[in-house]
Length: 424
RNA sequence: GAGCUUGUAGCUCAGUUGGUUAGAGCGCCAGGUUGUGGCCCUGGAGGUCGUGGGUUCAAUUCCCAUCAGGCUCCCCA
Image (cartoon, rainbow, N blue to C red):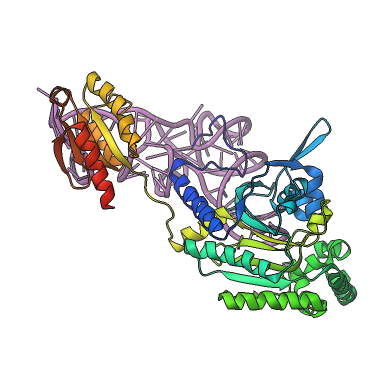
């Protein structure tokens, strides 16, 4: 096809009317369920200060080092938010949300931006929903976050997921482990992949995440972080696992699961969908007990997760799950002649006033074309108006599903519609 | 950031071993029924064959570049 003069940027897509139904469905589901879990929505700006994201996620994280959309205007440095944990925490600190009392249970839905190379399940503008529980160190918060995450996927019908679970401990135990890991890798340093050699110095934990062939033998023989957890961390992890068992949520422990952002501590988890191919992480999260302080607030424990909405839809597609309903309209007014069009224009409002959706032809088309259009719009009823009907005040209400029709006054038509609605 | 692969109508795809007007199905518009949809029939609109350059008498077809999609790596949701 020839290239249009203007198009979306690389890796950014329009959500067209035919697809928007499933988005609305999912957003509605998330909102309804979040309310049931007693979470409150929070909305933060698309643009954040560069420094927040750099401090929050870590200078060396892949996201910050190569995937950030940023620009400056005067002395202000802007980034398009690549995730929402740091912004939500920023908001929490900025507005002293701790003063509202208790743990803050927040959820969000919205677009994120990462300058990655696009492919299926990975767009430069993509959408996440997620939640953050700020102000509780209790493992019950971890369990609730995971529970909500699983709950949404189950509600949608995605049940064949794998929950991977790990604990990366508190900072002290992690330092211990880092030392042990480096000691283990030291003799093999020359044999490690280039990336892993770099990470050896910067962020040795991430070596565990490596998919490089040459690293695998050393990763498999590496010490396991869960052996280095402090007693508190161990207890916390143990408690999370017990809560998950009580909730009937199966999980797989993966001692090599490490998350990409620097702010994570203790519990780390990922939800994997076998239906996604290369981008198989459909949701991920964990505890980040140090982030609030890092951003300038009081030391405050927190836990949360984020899920990729596009990836959720891909999984649905693979599983044959259809979300949302077909489009339809309650009443399509079919008009014949100018007088009828005027009548229709006025009476559309009366119908809508009663809570029924209503439309009519805007193109001055033939009756047949209008009927066809009504069919395409999936109209429940057509209301046929011509000179005859205007003269005797009886209009034809055609039930498009039953294919029968009757002549009624407009008042009768409205009550007929209401009767039909009550049947449902 | 790297490798591979694809790019023909709104959509899904044929086709052209380089040669006058590029096809199908679906969708769209109109008519068959001068006031009645879904099925059927007839007709129509819609494509400089992703874009730019090169080779050639001639390129949608071959070559190069570029852009976009897909798969994989990397990373992540």
